[in-house]
Length: 410
Image (cartoon, rainbow, N blue to C red; front, side, top):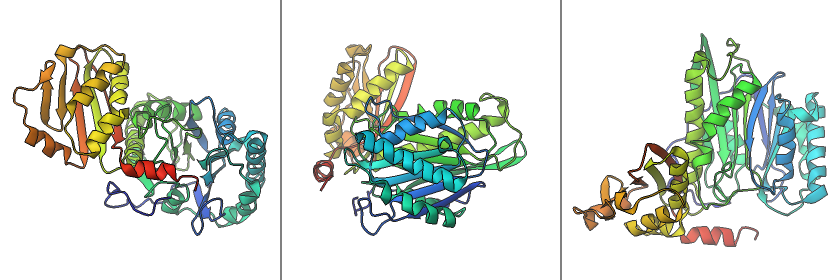
């Protein structure tokens, strides 16, 4: 884990009040890091609904396989997360570790193992000793308390330089409900479904199928629209827990008008966390926001935006504060999506640098260079073909990224 906090870290950390029906504890198991917490336990009231989105990789971790099966039940009592070891590509040993951890947590909570959710993050291919985790669960369960969200975010960090948290409060009918979320991620970040761990809890009463529908919508413009290095992890896990403790009238479906404010708040929490992940990209010094508009459709716009955001040449140009719009042209052209060279327009910030397939007639190197010195680099591309639009969030590529990943297993 890096000791230097990213210059893109939030200037302040929001206060995350308790979410009714959720209790939290963290501990230090020494899985990889010394003198820091690396195990998180969340306990939920009986009847808590759960929804989730998991990695699409063909090489998922053992905890991802466990969560995929457990999500079918739609109910949760316990979440156990460790950092320092991904328990991925660990064969039968990895399965045995997830099984023993889930069974031990279930026994403590008085529930079935299918109501226990697991996540692991860290080095791939190293066996995870269950004796590093299971013996701690009893003490964690005993001291779990309603506060501790910031410590929970710190416990799941790996190469992150800061804890990522977000919160919102809205009403469903006459009931006030809280949404709290944490995330980790700084490298191996790409869509499908965005490489990271994130856990969100609310005290709203929402059925599992409705919660899943809301999450599926919210993840597309947030965690599925961030990329640091185009690499999708073995361990992507996003889980949302709804305890029902707010006792609001249960919504009839995801399109129930009573859920409109809640859905908007969930969208905002996930986007906040997703942007924090992008801004904490390993070695990052600048956030990149790529917006493609005028595409044939939204899907095409997203593919082109990802082509730009994932281009090492674009990312290094941003790192060097070089207004090299030719690299953006390259990335548009290689995306394999409909594009017309002579319709293309490109902006860096508010400065239009290219228009109708050539350098803008009013192009100013000084103005373009000034735009590249900003903390957030907004790249906008208008294809001039249709109404498709999408925004992707990313970061620059610096020498520090190579150093961090060259030494990751050391």
